[in-house]
Image (cartoon, rainbow, N blue to C red):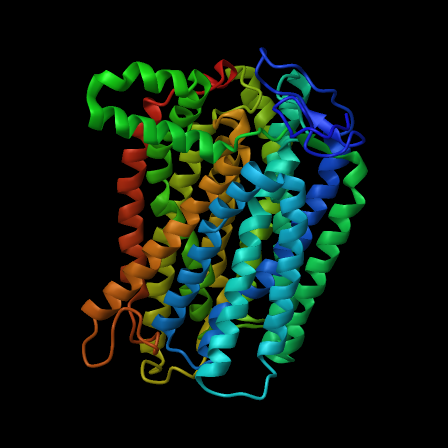
Length: 524
């Protein structure tokens, strides 16, 4: 299908040897579909494993670097981690725009991977450059945010591209697509387990330069794996007018209609087709669900900040004199995901499917809601454990000895991480599939970017809460987030998040009851 003319909605973006996903619109011609399926999905899951290894090699222990080599306070470091994570989770909106309106997902992934490698390379150098003070800090944060920018292009496109390998019109492939999201997250967590177990140990005990270099090499492998699968992939057809442009036209037309009255309604209607209006409605109807998931994202942000600092104060010896890095706690969240996903996908879903008749067992909104309940319970557990930690510090006279190890095993922190992981299996994966499946067909990358933006905004809310609470509770230099955690009150913060989670759950259930699924097969 080579042509010298400009692309149209029925022409492929790439060359003829690349496979195409057919349009879901029955009024449009169907492009041939070869390749794809699990053969292609395996390559893409491999890419995700390597990319998450690289990303979490930086993010999971970032608070240790900020409070260590960069010398920031606990509250400032937590706010900076949340801010960076927030930006990293919002930038996929930009990546989705580039992919869906200009480059397509395949090319966006390639360019984002190259930028990713550059950012990680600069980050590796940042620790050893012969400079001190603000210049070194500025260079570090420039490199860090370059990684966030690259991740913003990579993350939504890879996941959407993976789901694109399954044709939603085929009942069997529809089941496989739902299963894909489960195994996608399974692979992702596998990469996280390895990085928090190995890379964090290297960063804390050997060398930060090597600890940053390993993620850079991992990202190189991610790009190689992705390119190796090129001949097997299906590619979606890129519209001649990007989805953001089409939705923007609807919004502008609506605003003009209100300003100019009904005299221009007919003229506006001739310019904006019905399909564009439906696309805009398809995105707007997701917003209530988006808003009611924000507190879940705030809770999610805590696993890589304060809980890690708590672990530093506790007994982390496991064999002889071997002391595990505190950030390794995050691996238990991933391990619980890895353990529970096969149970969920192979046992729970088939059983529930027999009763509901839904290919995914539970509806997507039911799955998300169950995870929210578990997330709320995790905050209750976290608060109770912190109360126990503070009581132990008082019992042994360690309140004013922040550098002394509290005789309380770090295993006390594991249950909350296990609950984090089980919650993710329900809510995180459910949100991924929901925002992919429920947006209009031409907006898949945007849908996953919207899902990721929940966690971006959630991180900003977390950062705002931490800063606000730190200022309002500070008395004589001590606050809920005091650098001396033995005089801090993280338990109060966790109780606050548990209460907000309960309020969120009520609001979510109300909104979910009124939601109408895009596809009839998803209805209860």
